Length: 244
Image 1 (cartoon, rainbow, N blue to C red):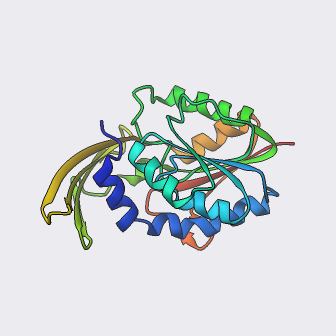
Image 2 (image 1 turned 90 degrees about the horizontal axis):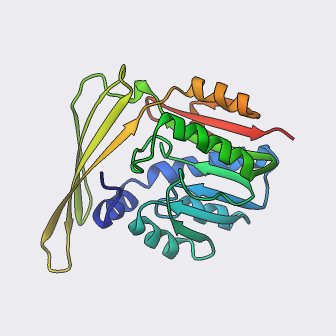
């Protein structure tokens, strides 16, 4: 399974930045209300660095991680003051930090062959160990209700030099969903290149995750928005704080 090659990374940044730009003010406010007003934030699944740029401008130190080298290249240009590395949230060593964020269904994507429900549980424990007391863990998750009512569902969008065709399939009872993305991107000669990626997501119940985080030692709650930005149908945000 591919994970945001050059074309899809470019299209995601050029045409779908409304999600990151929309959620950023709400997530930033959430960090500050929890008392995390400075320090190191580890942004997992950092994408093209838009959230990292907001964090840096707000005075935080930022470490961004993404499995896609193409995304990391975009991120380094957008947020030169942050540190970035290519890696999987399931395997990388998390530094001692004040907050961890994973915005955009990052915990659902099965890009890493080690992805499993047990691996996510281990990841939660690693986040807990890395956070300083009072530190915050913010992420959102695609639940079983993320599957469209009728599948396959087809979507299409285009920009000045690209178009994207997406087919969504899935099964809510079996808790899986796939997105097949077909990209057309114009090159310098004016010709269009076609590339294709299939992303598979493991769907998880947010309430079950909150219960697990509480057992680990977090205080956690679910949300249906980041500030004024309401999440898409089937997405649920989780805000967890390491007890002091």
